[in-house]
Amino acid sequence: MPAVDIPGAKRAGLPVDLDRLTAEGDAWLSAEERYALKQHGVCAQAQPDMFMIRVRTGTGVLPSTSARGLAAIAEAHGRNWVHVTTRQQVELHHVNARAVTTVLATLADAGLTSSSTCGHAVRGVMSCPDAGVGLAEPFDCRPDAEAASASILASAPESNHRLPQRLNIAFGGDCRAHAQTNDLGFVSVIAEHGTLGYELLIGGSLGRSAPTLARRAVGFLPREDVLPAVHALLEVFCAHGNFDQPTCSPVCGFCAMATAKPTRPDSGSGVPRGKDG
Image (cartoon, rainbow, N blue to C red; front, side):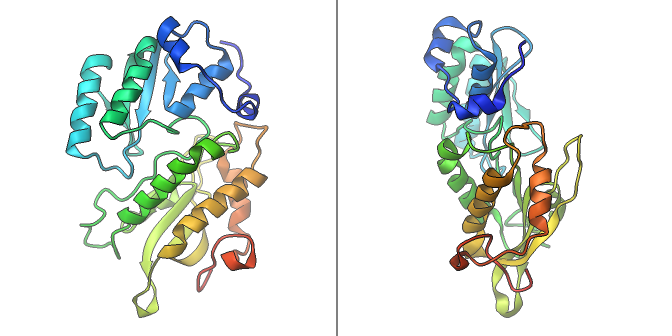
């Protein structure tokens, strides 16, 4: 397999002909086109003409109707099994190249998507498994996690080809460890006078090359500032991350950001600043 020019593929806009994949299989794909497939959540396996498709679950929640649809797809195209990942996503393995577009369309019919689940993208947003019912959580973080997930997914066509690396985001209340091991972590807290918000952590990773616990960037971020903060941090990463060294961990960019003093959005730059941020 020839080396892939990931920066070149992203500068070209990540083009790939899915219809040709359906008609001819995968023998014609260049290394860059194989990488571009990852933006659709489609990753080549070692076996010829076989792919893994990673499916988003939003924040680890899979409605029963979607679960039934996923099971039907697995039975028809994935050797009758699915893999649940450590990041609350679901994978279908051994999908034939000629069936990829059928699977993607059937996922959409089931209310699911595999968009931006592989490659340099903002991956599926995590939340506490017991969000909404956890006895120790300050408040339910799942609605904010779902809003962030939807907003990120909507902006993916414009942002994926600009991201220097992949990004992982987690929301937590009583599962702080998830937030500490993600590039961006939001830990729900209640400030004085009962205001709901988040402690913002940045720079965490469980990657083999640089496992790192996230640092606190903002002590209190009001709930209404979550989406502006997410998109501001993405813009900073796109502007200052190492685009031409795709193996460089996102931690490299976010550790520098963790030491910067955040500013309010109305000052014209940066991340919303909290009371003790």
